[in-house]
Length: 345
Image 1: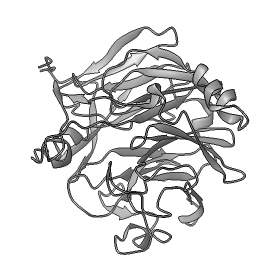
Image 2: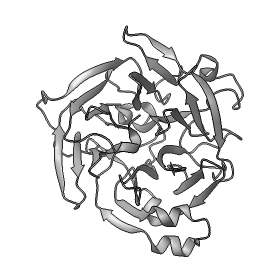
Image 3: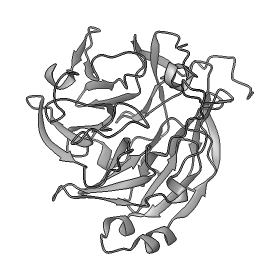
Image 4: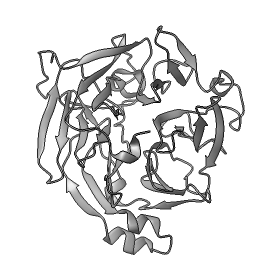
């Protein structure tokens, strides 16, 4: 078993405390939004975290009702983030769990307008998902959005103007994941089988030229966005353009700053690493409280938000045994640079 840190780092400030597993945090116009993956119990999936401690269903209670059809409610939210257009973008995986069947019409990228707090646009991803897809996360590059598929290995390219989506690098080795290791052990489902999560993390370089991506089990690759954005590029040509970038560990979440430095969580050793543009790697912070840091967020004040989600201690990833130590904390610490300009609204 990997050695885990034993001392708490004073640079880490716990800013939010949740009574459920929380994997997503983003800030927008001074507001804080959270997402819950339903990994420990059912309930509301997206909330606004209010200064008085309340958690308001967002954009409203209706979208968070489990008994609503998928055109009126979330199926399974896996991520959310502020977009460069000032809207809150929510990723619906389209299936209740990794390995589950897609709900027809469930896989979507949903845009919420903060002026009036209403869903303004829904991008359906039906034409790009597989029956066993699990749409995981999103990044933006101009009028293009790139989404990862952790259920069926591949990337999804969405044209935000036309609403058309297509699948690329389908089944490519760079998008396929192996066993995920957290706290020195492999994740296992309730039946004892190894859990494999395919392409999960992705980041766009500040100049928009490169997409960096990797499965949750690690091994980061990159590809020039010019190839992704061109629908005439063949699958074989696309595959030839993939570059192996860095041998990363099992990872829960990433972020990128204005210098092109990538922050990535090391699930194996409860650390957050810094991957510089020259491919050098160093430890930013190691702390016993950083149990499965998931989707990180870098705000305009150059503060890195880190939800210590403890996903590996939920029953679905821990051999059927629930061992989450509540509350689930979201930490924050200052870093050297803020987000790329496109991520600041």
